[in-house]
Amino acid sequence: MAVLVQFEFPFEGPFGAELVQAARELAASIAQEPGLKWKIWIENEPARQSGGTYLFEDRASAEAYVKKHSARLSQFGVTHPRVSFFDVNEELTRITRGPVD
Image (cartoon, rainbow, N blue to C red; front, side, top):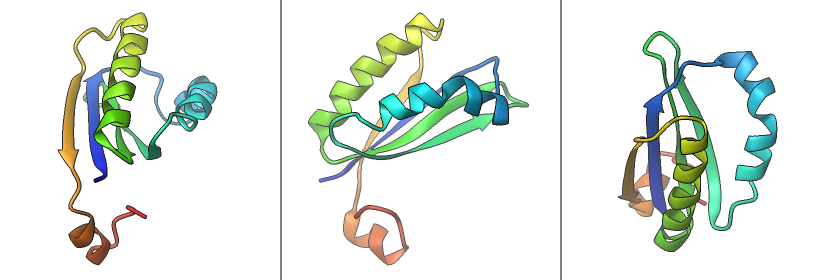
């Protein structure tokens, strides 16, 4: 069963195009994570927040990534990200055109 992971944390920037330039190598690295189907990068500049929504093939892959990414974030000064795990109802998600395949 696919597992969705949501990360949210305080972030002082950069945002938008500046973040693209700063995080391009990080994005390429994340794309190689075992079990990762996709990631959506999220940012809220007025609220000074950032994060990501990830879809993994299974819970084990998701948990391994959360451990790795939490350690990476702590190196950037983010010590308490909000992390949530959700099992994905793939059948209903397909009906509503969610990208689970």
